[in-house]
Image (cartoon, rainbow, N blue to C red; front, side):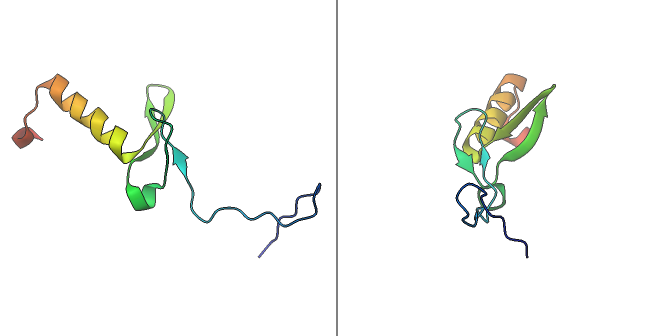
Length: 73
């Protein structure tokens, strides 16, 4: 495996094993594989990431705006 060395300090750089995304709404870091959520979605041409809480809120808002009941979804 390749090591990455910081040329200024000479120390090995260790990257986190888990890839964290940052929510576009609340700016909370989250791991999609463990927590859920939406990573790399698009609203029109705008890239978005949603943590599980904000994704749930956006979907709930859409259901309310469309007049959908629990049994309809």
